[in-house]
Length: 319
Image (cartoon, rainbow, N blue to C red; front, side):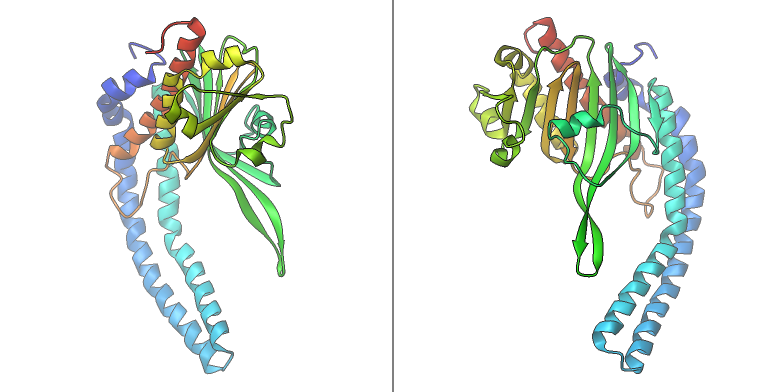
């Protein structure tokens, strides 16, 4: 690459070559497997439908009750549905891993599928960006460097165990994206930004350690609540361009309740939403470059955040 680490340039200028040389060969090989897996799906789905009808009929025949018959039929449908989708799911997982590893290698990043413990996850819970639960899982981690700032971006799922009449179940507290960006310069204060919703409950955990910061623009005031231990540094960091970048990031990820914190030398961002880094449905062809382009576009949004913060640190006028 002519400009190593410049993901924006990669996405805009060299994507066709990246896709054609590194990604498309992987997807072509997996497309053959996908077609076979979908054929198997429809065969198994047909058998599953027969099994569901058979279970319902047998349960009703022995007069075990309509509710039990419905429950048994639904359980059978779920089991046979998973059985039918198993081959396609295996193809999707293999194609995804290979494609994302190829993307990471091309842009000088690392990619980890799962089984990793994110550094600094305690900071996300300390500043109430992510709730504390009974278990948390993380996957699809990209990590790299942009303009001297290291970053990591991954999906997270936090759950708590809830007691029920029949035992217990797992309830989702947070599902979405977590971003951690390390800057060379440490921040003097802690500044926390939340969407303007439910702030009274949110502030109870802080006491008087942080004070509210006015944004000075009505539209942004309606969108966000900002609290900081240093008003001067907070106003330098949260200039309008940076706040616009946050809104763009939330829109891009189709998320909600975005929140972030500047603390020590880090910018931490949490966005509630669906999983990213998925190649999409197995019922349409894998040979669609849009499946891959969206991943690079996601990463480019993170680069825009880094650039906005670096602009503030240099004391330059936001661009």
